[in-house]
Length: 159
Image 1 (cartoon, rainbow, N blue to C red):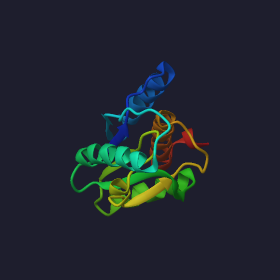
Image 2: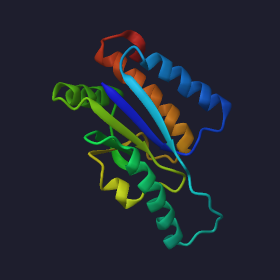
Image 3: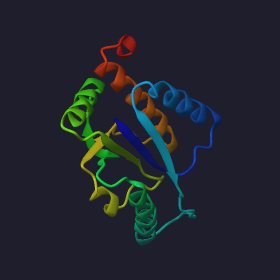
Image 4: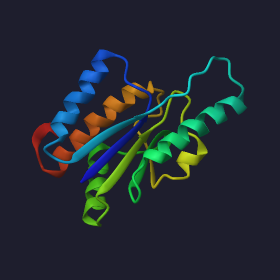
């Protein structure tokens, strides 16, 4: 299985960089994973709603340019469907069974995702209705991918 994580912005905090690197290392035994960071637009608040949409569209274009052709795109958005870890494992395993072995996870910037990216989604996933910093979501995603792979392989980490 090939997984690409397309994320807006660079990780800044050392603990996040180290955490993501640790889970990337752990995942190497299960799948090929690549993290692609796209440039985050700079802005000053307050922003008009028009400016917010323009920023999300610009970031969205960069995101869409990085999603490999033919990939199953899973967009992370608070308005998406929430799943338990074992349910996500079933969904990802089913993708592999049915020949969809290229998956792209997308994490937007601090303003969220533009409609151009949401329209590209094959599945919209929510980890929570809470608002989290988008950099923290990257770490949560990596941990969940590791958990999902151990569930699929029947290993004990999930417990």
